[in-house]
Length: 279
Image: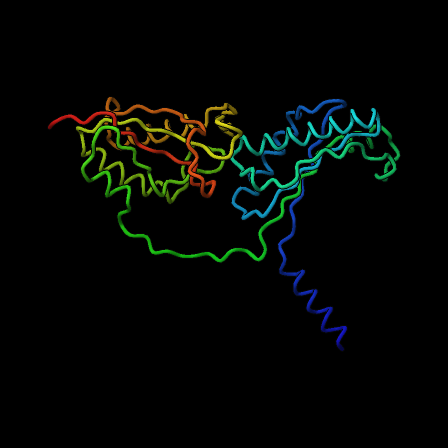
């Protein structure tokens, strides 16, 4: 009976545990550049995990059985680093990538397959293991007021040089467009800015998680100008809502000024007041 209770307890724990997600990226012989088709597959995988609460990401590079040990270790590490760079370029938090290691060669007899070339092709890879947070963090529901800090600041006394974070505007990871809920907030901001006709400003776009101060890659256009694209998105949106275009400029700030908090907070746009004319 005791054994049955222990078994049932373990079964319940395993049933409720969130499973790791795994993905493999395959490479050409002696190469660490990601093939185009594999890159597309990787981006699809990133789309499936971008809203997940992730505990850690492990990235392991491998080679086939040919080449010296030193050569294979270097090549497998370069492959792992190439995958890490894609994560970083697409605004995934590098602090979650706890293992980025080259493991060298995989022995031929590990895979049950008769075709030697196929076996070697399957061994030239990187394994990605995504571990979700468990148990999941509780969802906290907060009542949202009709106005927020951003709107209060924009309605108040402004001076040249003021920088205002457009709070509660959240972008999709790797893209320049806002979530549906954020557009409601931006609509209210647009009304305020349209009325304050003497205020001129620059819209500054930011990204998170890239190496150094690099810009992130816009998944839609495949260009490394995501911070500019985000600023331009807000610019176009405000023009469409009646804010005169000659009052605004837009600029991409890349990752020059991370806030140091949650990664999604660095996917942001700020307004820099450049000129205020007397009415």
